[in-house]
Length: 289
Image: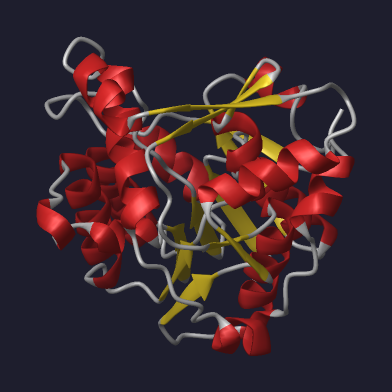
């Protein structure tokens, strides 16, 4: 594997993977909708190819002459069940294009917390789509790698922080083995180096376990850019607001799952094959502006 096309390479989790793949010596092309915007975000040694997940011809053109495709898709907070979803219809187009252009491997980032679906009467259409995406990858006939990450340190920074406030909701009952996106990117790069035509699925976890409350407390303790306050709301309030707001409804569901999913450490095999993450949450926070 030398030429890799990345779908979803400009976002919070995509950009670090692109950087680590490029640093590892792979020839990287990133599928983008706007080259001018992407040029401001991605490294200069990354090739940009304009395309749209709803346009199969643009995907086939982008995928041509690439050995592998790395896929980072998500359902946005304002999406509704009947909308076009990148992890559903978009993924089907990706797989169609990958087969037609003879791509040799598909790598896909999923989620560990989707395993909460069906527990405690929790049933969310977003998790259904994410599980169906995994099934599509498995049944594609293309050798695949699927990554199931715990919570990212970047998510603590972007999702829990609002200005100088750190916002929590509900009670976080279990520890999450939080990982930095650049450490994950190194593991992705390593997987492309060692895997041939086998199918692999990896649990992605960091070296420290925190409940959401503990992670936010650690963030506040080590953040040097401002004095932050921790504020907490009942999850029932978010659920009520979710009746009127699609974004709030999304937030209430994802927080309910994160607060209650009994995550266990299960990444030892991943560490042995792809390398042990080294970034601690306190060191990640100290580097933030």
